[in-house]
Structure formats: structure tokens, C-alpha cells
Length: 366
Image (cartoon, rainbow, N blue to C red; front, top):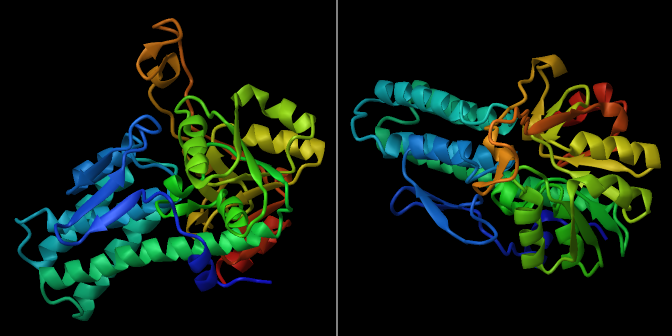
């Protein structure tokens, strides 16, 4: 029986709420993911600078969650600045805010997508006369930011329903990094959405989660999130990925994506490429799950900047040295998986199969 989004919302209730907008005091409250799983601390963001810093410092992370946060960050650009008196000044302030937010994390396409959407809405509202005052403009932008959140949640449910088609009872799914509700801001997730819905529908599905060095999003976040949901999860080192697949411990691989190109190249957390190659070699289906907002139909693979982060993230763990202090470090946080290793890309609009260069544009733009 094919469930609807509305029916799923009755069956599944997120256990975690990573992003909360408080309209009464114009505050965006986020669950600080840099402190999980040892501390569950919520942080209030009240302006653009604190929002951009939260994104940069990975207090909020995951492409969809970054997009939602950035959308509300554009709202905060106006609610926090009492010096903006005219609509022209508001547009200039929003343009400035967009530049600040966009620079926080360069690889996740949802960031620029969300800020562009919010700025375009504001410009159109002013030009069309739909917003005649700053407060009217703010109200319109609040509605749009909420719409971004709602669209993301509905998309994740649809992805979960499509992903369920690739799961059987007692399956074990290998993932990478954290592509659950913490990464999307909704509490559900992309790659973990089929697993959570399977659990809600009474299926026995388990997950193997690599630790995902150097930020350990697998061990800190994915394991924490799945245990909160009561889903069986096994933590492994990143270096054990090949062995667990070779030994037949995995039925499929499901990962998220920070950016997907029109030809099917998938940018995701470092370590994804390795999983895809090994899965392909062993005949294990590899799926990337992402909303259509994560697709970049304009760029080619050589144009995308792979974010590199502080070498001390590799030299240390939570400030404790684990390597010589001055050792040279290469610390890319994403890699790129070529389309030949991907069995399908699961979106809210359906499952995209090869040839991706033909099918992605057709499905994403429909």
C-alpha cells in the first residue's frame, strides 16, 4: 500500500527538533551539533553574523539544514537591524547578508539556493508593491522561510517512501556521515528517511554507521540519532567499510548529498566515493538521497570547490593531540562520486536511474 505524505505524518513523529523558529522574539534556535552526543544544548541565533558563524563552525550542518538556517538568517538580517528604515535599505541589507551567509560553507548548494530564493522574494515583493513597509517585508520573508522548512520535510517523506521500495525486512543499510534529521533540520532526514519510516511501519531494518573522521558525524550524530529513534545501529571505523561489505553484512548503501550535478556526479562527505567504488565492485546497490534543491544543473565537476578545513581537525580530537603538532595535513571534507558507481538517485520526485545525463534534468525540472 502506497502511503501519502499526510498519512506518514500521522505515523511518524520526529524525536529530535534540530531547528526551531521562535516568532515571538525573532530568534532561530538550533541544536548545537558540535556538542552532541555528550551535551544537548540549544543555541539562540538573533542576527546574520551569529547565523553564518553557526554554519561555519558546524553547529548546524548538512546541506538541507544549512539551507533552512540560511533562509531564517535572511529574516534575521532585517529583524536584528533597527537602522534599516526604507525598503531600498532593506534590499541592500539583504544583499549584504546573503554574501555573509554564502561564504560560510562553499560546497553545499542549498545554502546559496536558499539565500537566493529569499533575496529574490524580497526584491519581487518590493518591486510589485506586495510589501509597502519593512514589517510587511519581514512577514513575507518569515512565511517563505517556513515554506522552505515545510517543503524540505515533505520532500524527505517522499524520499523515504521511494527509498522504502529499495528495502526489505531485516535489511542492513550502510550509510556515511550523518544524513538524518540532524542534517536536514526537520528531524527526519534524507538517507535515513527510508530507515526511519521502515521502523515506523514495523519493519526490522538496521544501519551500519562509519565514524566519519575527522568530525565524527557518524559516531557522534548518526549513532545518537538512530539510538534516539530506537533503530538498531552498529558503529564501525572508516577503515572497516570494505570488510563489512565484503563479508555480506550490507544489503545496500544509502548516503545523502550536498550537491548533485546534471550528469550524476555526487558531492558528499569525504569517504562516500570509497563506499561507492567498493559497493559497485561487490554488486551492492548504492543510492544517493537528496531533495531537488540539492541539484546543480549549471556547473560541471571541475568547477566545484571542495571545502578544506582546519588541519587541527585531523591532528586532534576535541583538542587532544593524536599526531605530531606540525605534520602536514590535507583535510578535504567532501569528495565526488562519479555516476558510474551509482545505482539510483532518490529524490522527492522519484528515483532517477542511469543514464543520469538524460534523466536528471527531466525529473528535477518537471
